[in-house]
Length: 268
Image (cartoon, rainbow, N blue to C red):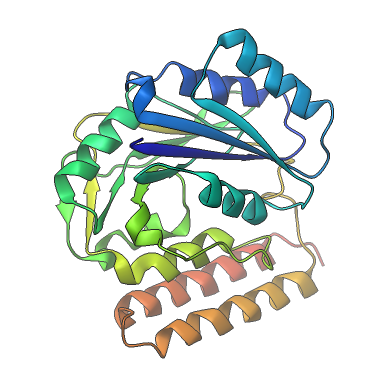
């Protein structure tokens, strides 16, 4: 098993079928990847619907797992424990991928080795209008040994493939609802010495849903509490020799900017 794709889902809606279909239609040999769909929180009829879809489409490399514990971090951690692949790929249930996505990521992973991560470009699109809001512009085939120059890829866990050896025993911190992606990526950064971009135009399509948990407005108390709690972890990493200090400073600045942006969206 080369790749384990982990798809956390909570009360999934229509969009999950587009996500799963894009995974089913991958050009990579089905024997080389598995898809673990981790349903968390409320179980039915979500579990039965996904299980029936797997059976109807006869995708033997797909599995549905369930945990009653809410939270994307809990779901991803379960996926990490149950997965078998050499490389880990995270996909959100409302997103989807190009047909060659897994194939191209694996190709780049095997080129740069187990101390590097492979990344793909991504497109943010509006759920209703389908308009492209943002397109990343990483140079195809580029390999970078300086994680600071591609620090933005550490803001999220999607649009990349991560060797299991890099993750090791590190897991998502389930105490955070916002910022858990960047916290996880910062923690594993000590094991990353290369970032390689796939060799051809291969995209991760990110659906922007205004009612998603990410975009729901937070109150000022929550924003500040979340900021200071994350900052504690960032400074804790800063004290450790194995972490790149310049990189951490850049991520702290990004955290501050992100917090100010959230505050600007509030109406007092």
